[in-house]
Image (cartoon, rainbow, N blue to C red; front, side):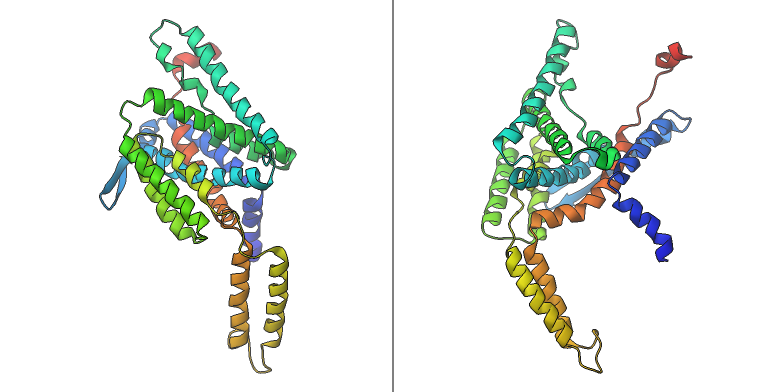
Length: 332
């Protein structure tokens, strides 16, 4: 069994694996959308899904559920990565963080300006906001394909740039292209963010508490008319990044617990029957939980789900573009 599973485990552990799955799903979507079975492709994503949470009811097509719902989880994980880098990583100083922010500003303003010049006075002049966004999911997927060949600093820069660019584009859509913004829902979202910040300051570390408030935040953002994926980034900003015990205390407690475990088993006992060893195991689990920041623990748990489920689904649902025969005619 181990011999059978080890290739899959190695594939899942490889940094480039998520990018390979993303690329494969994008190719499948493109081929499927231009095949004789294209009707089934587009029909699948138009299927209706939904759920009810108290008085809030969410009903949308499968395509919108992926883009507005599952992608909020993707933005949450990316937001955790950016927060970590802002605190202790490649973006921990203003000088380091300023470059991707200004680069993102240029990446939004220049395409918008070029679009406005080309379409000035035409029927499409109002669409200047369209070329401003970077498809962050595919950008990260391409980076993942390159694996260790890309320096960490470059990866962090590009991800930060894509995040800043995407937030800017969402703000442009909210301010200039959203006709009906619900300010009451936005105020509710602001209150939930404040509650999340208070929970962080009060030392609340249980992921379930943040998950519950995160779902409420997502629902409020969705009801406001602003792109709901922003909720993922706002939630990530409030996740605790501090540990309860420092490295020295963890090492001291760990050694003591392991000594208790070693001495806790009698001559006729096993780990299943020794109460002392079971207590030592549980105590070691608590010490490990206290030595790890919730930010890192949550990011670690969700990384595989995002890389191998959410991003491939996003690619499968969005990369299926019909290629008109007239476009390909010159190549024939």
